Image 1 (cartoon, helix red, strand yellow):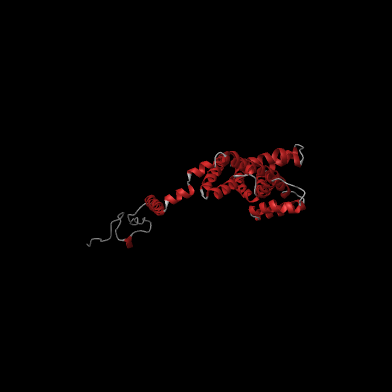
Image 2 (tube, rainbow, N blue to C red):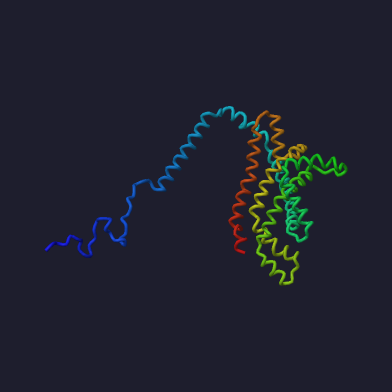
Length: 296
């Protein structure tokens, strides 16, 4: 009687060719290696090392004595006070505020014209917006400062009015598109509900749509105010009396008088005093009102 050499019932063989198809395959051999977290940590370390090396090279190669003499002349900087605050900074804020108010008023009209059902209104608004968005602000200042007196010699506009108009024209083209987007972000159901209560289209726009739109567009309008503050530096090309100088004009005059570039550093700090709080305000408004359009 011969002994059966086949494997007993219920037992498994180690030969892969005889393993039943239903048996799970053995797990693949995992090779040891670095985790993604460790690789990211090494990558950051390399980046920090490259940055430190670059900074060290700059520190070693720079001529700090000459830089301090050219850009950090304390006597020149102190000589700009208090005029840099009482005159230049004040005029910069005044030009920016007047230009922003005029630009915002024009932008509201342009945005409503752009959304109008009347074709000529839409065409005029679109042409205006594309024209002034396509022109450099410098060209607008040159045309307004030197073109208007030639075209209308009897008008006799002051420098303040010319600067306000130039800044208003430049800013209105950008703010009009921002306001239009804010109006379109307000749900149409708001207008339909107002109309169902007997409101006219204009009253619904003024009392219902525009307040909600402005809550949505407050952050980008704050950014536009920052850009307008910097654009106000172009007013120096129009020339002005000593009492009408803004920051850029004062810096230019001080550079000519002192043969030093320190005034650039002084006015740069003044611009930062204006723009950094506005940037912080923009972030606060964005956190507060950023989701108004999506929650409505």
